[in-house]
Image (cartoon, rainbow, N blue to C red; front, top):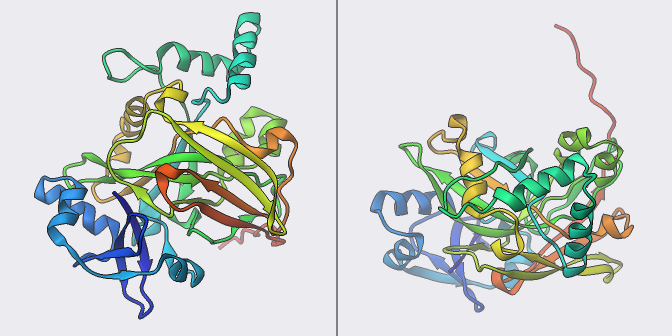
Length: 327
């Protein structure tokens, strides 16, 4: 099952099921968070809750997307209570990338990043299914940094780059007792400043504080062990760069459970009612191939597992720094 959030033509906000045909509007719920709270209270999964509620209409995918009425598949009415985070150095990449990685590890003289990657290889998938070695972790922003499918990913004036990062993200709702509940998985564009990070890895924190997007569909249930997709930079209607990306645990150095355990081990991430969007990392992005994403380029990420592609234009913002005033 895949979920979508949207505004209907008359302005009503609803949640729908996407299964390849018209969107089926779920009866009686306006948001994914509301649906999740019902499932937690009922002690059932989201799919059973949707089945119990039923449907009361349909909507046309292309019309809703074209009108800009499709929202991120989950959001919070208080954007500051949506925490956007991620983990890096988690993916094995293509066969060629794996060969280069093994050669680097064999050479022995490792950068800090490769040491972190090696830790994941050795301890990111504990045999007992519990928590293993902790991954690299970063803060991305809050709900204000999330743009909807089709919305512009803004590259700020102080940025050196604004590049694609095709990822899968997990979406979580914290229950009233502090238990994190996974609502599902979605395609994500983590959109980072790779040129800034390349100057010095200690600039990683700065490079991640950018806009991002995920969706348009939320996959409910388990994630396939291997997920294949395509990511492209589209300029003037045609791709100037396109690659396959691989994700899922078979292509990662960590289990999803391990990444989740090391995020939610912090008590302040278990505040009841909060929403979390956590990016799991990537091994494929255009910057690595020397592509500079331009103003007006469209970043497209797609995978059959997640239904419709995630597409977002990039917009350069000329606004200068904000001055601080003393009181």
